[in-house]
Length: 463
Image (cartoon, rainbow, N blue to C red):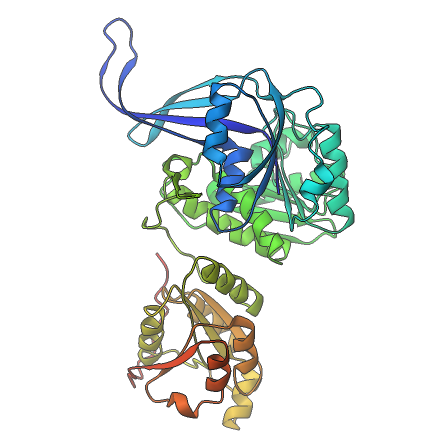
C-alpha cells in the first residue's frame, strides 16, 4: 500500500550544440519526450514492477495532466484517488547528454476539500502487507483521515515505512521505520547542529529523530555513502552502497523507500530490508535512474542489461528463500548447489559457474563446521565457516549463501524448493538422498562436468 502525493514527471530529451543568439542560454534541439508517474506514483510503480500487487491512495485532478497521469498508472497499480485542487503537479526536466539542464514546476496538486471522506480507507487498506507513506509535501500525508487510518496497521503490527518531506507533516507515532536523507534529517532534527558528516553524523541525527518521531527505527540515506539505521532499543547498523557511475539519481529515494517496504512485507528484518534497498537503489541509479524507467506491458521497468556492480551475495536461509521467491515470481529458474567448500579451489568454482549458467539465480548451501565434523569424523574443516561463507558470497556466480547443520541439505532444500539441484560430475544423482525430495515438487537433480583441480583460489569478487 502506497499513500502519498502523485505528480506527473516529464523528461524532454535533446541535444545542445549552440547558444541562443539573443542571450547566453543553450538551445535544446528536442529529440523526444517521456512521461511517467512521479512522487508517490513512481514509488508505487517501481514496487509494482517487481511483480508485487500495489494499491495507491492519492489525490488526482480531472485536468489534462491529471488524465494523462491516470492513463500512465492504469493497469500498473490499483488507484484509490480522492479529488485534487490547484492543478496537477507537473515536473518537466529539460535534459541533454543524460543530465538535466533545467526543471520547470507547475500545479499545486493539493488534496481537495474532503479528500478522503469517500475513499473507504478501512476497506481499501485492510489487506496490505506493508504501507509506504511517500510524502512529497502536497498534503495527502497530512490529511487527518489518512493519519487516523495509519494507526490501524500499526496496531496490528503491519510495517509502516514513512518517507518524509521537508514541507510535509511529521510521521505518525510508532512508524516502523522513517527514511529521510541526510539533508532532510538535518532539517528535521533542529536544535544544535551536528558536527561532522557521513555515518557518525547521520547516527547522531537518527538518535534525535527517534525520540522526536517515536519511531521503531530511523534510517538515514547518504547517497553514495549508503545508509545507517538506529533502532529504538539502541542498536545501530550500516549498509554500504556499491560504487556506481551516478548519472541521474532522480527517483532513487522512491526506489529505496519502496524497497524497504517490499522487503518488510516479505518478512525481512529492518536491517535486512535496508541493506536490500540500498543495493537496489544503487542498481537503479546505475541503470539511469528515473529517466530510464519505461512502461513495458503493465509494468514500469528500467532496462535490465546495464552493467550494475554486484556486492557480495547475502547469506542466511531467510535471505536465500526471499531471493528464490522473487525469481520464481518473475518466472525465472532457481538453481541451488551445495557442499562444504573447504579450501575453495578451481574445481569448486567451475561447478558453481556451470550451475549459475543453468538458471536465473544460484543459491549455495554450505555445511556448518559441526556438519563437516560429523561427516568426516575429524576435527572439522580447515577453513572456518565464516570464511567459507565470505569466499562463496564474493563469487560473481553466487547470488545467496545459506548454511545447513544437518548431515545432508534436505531440510534447507525444502525451504528453498529450487528448480535444479546441481552436483559435480563425481556424484550420481540417483544415489543422492535429496533426489526424491527435489523431484517431489517438480525439480530435478543434475550433474555438471567435474574438474578435479586442487588449486586454491581467491574469490573472484564482484566488479
